[in-house]
Length: 275
Image (cartoon, rainbow, N blue to C red):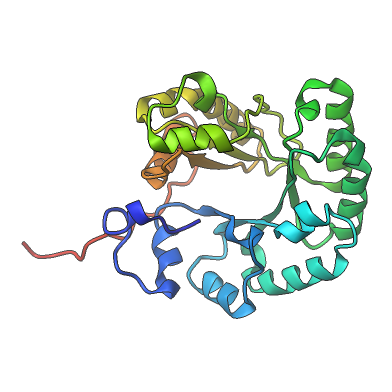
């Protein structure tokens, strides 16, 4: 996601033509969750414009389409995956990871299916897997089984940290909506590869969001000192200030790891004037 109604005219210039929107977002953050690809495989020409708007080191974490992960559940998906990979090929090195977000019904008994999919698919791309079945977090045998499969494939386990969000009852319409839709995921902070990916959901209250991510500041600092290259996505229920919060998180980590490169300077939302 690189456009949001509440960002327009405030964080990002408005109006912007479609072929300029990602470029403006990329001046705020150097990575993006490619969530729209879950609903439809993009046209290759569209992906070409994404590449043109971003530097080669910009990171796309691209979600596999719903028919592959939720409808066919990673079975008999060779043709669909081939079409998808062809569509995103213009991104080149910008494809940081292919994001395999699995449904909550994908259980430990299904791990052999995931193992077969990763074994047949890995090679040209890195995979990052997000699971939502409670047993993967609560049953040590299920945890170990999944970790072994991911490690063998060089794939990462993507934690979706909602612990800060569910710590207290919702106080806004956006929070109440998220309260009904978001999974209550246990905290997990173990990296399996040199490119860990974290998804964090805070609150619409900035103070609570910042309090909730302090654990991740320490974890990410540790990963960087180990030579890893983490990617962290900051969300709130309304996402109104998500780019600002992402930069704040980056600044907190950079205060501990000064050699971490700064984020780019945002393109002004309004034209600069002499007066």
